[in-house]
Image (cartoon, rainbow, N blue to C red; front, side, top):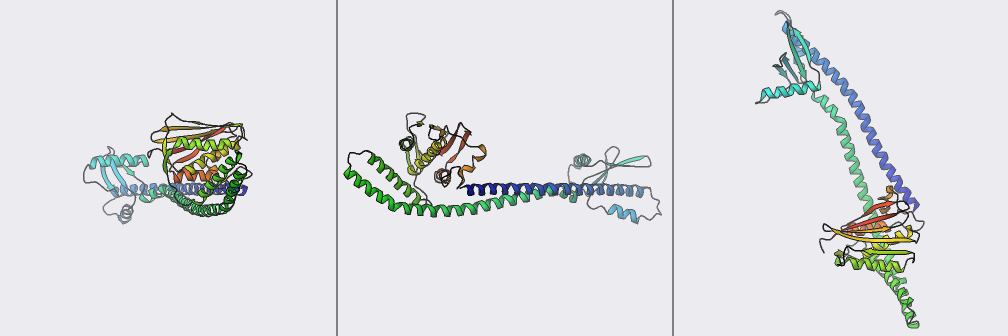
Length: 388
């Protein structure tokens, strides 16, 4: 079991490494992209300044001067949105700005404010006239700024898809192993159980007054029920409307007779009226027995177990509280992983099976509600009571 626990720890570390790598890639990419974007932004401002100077020169030129170069500079800007205004913010002209058919004045007021927030305007003067050029980042520069976020989204999406694909494959493999192991276990238990029942019948004939033989028969019958449970794993169990009170009391009574006298197990119900709910009684009793058994092991055979039932908003809450050594908060979810155990003996399948029985077969939830080291643990089961 230690190897399985180590494998789980290794898988958790690998997940952490992948996340750290993803963050590292995005961080480096963001730094590089920002550096490149800042360089491009600087070049664009220089380009706008040259464009502004070309406009100013075109106004000041004499009629006989060759304007081909200036025209090329002015017409060369096909990507940077520009709005040129006078000193009173009246729009003189615009370039690479898609003008609306209505509310033109409000549109330019908004655009000038936005451009000014992004980049400081360029001021140029001629013949005692002052004009301003407001400009925005080009589409290429904007895309460059957003690129790290797009890359981060792609990496996160890839990690999620890979994680769910891996989890689905792993779960399918686990299910196949579980079903095969369960049916083989049931098959192997069948013969010795039949032999034990025959020996019990023989003992009853020879020692009719011995009450212990009756208890022995109950245990063997219980083994038969367990074998039947294992044989049906992989198929959907039948759920019947039963008394939750009676089901819990039956499981508690069975465990009480087979645990130390220094362990007390008590049930607490909200009222004298029984709660009826859809359950598969043998499987649900096994869950309660498993939780009690783990609690007894955690308490080293000395302490108390309280099973409290509450009903609220069409849901039934069952809390199993013990006074054991508690569970580290980091292991609240890990303990439900198949093969994970802190015991020297055992397969580490009990809580995993309990989770499967409650969540997959009964549509409920089971989790560690709270736990404190050396004080105790509370497991909570949540079931729907709509079908009662």
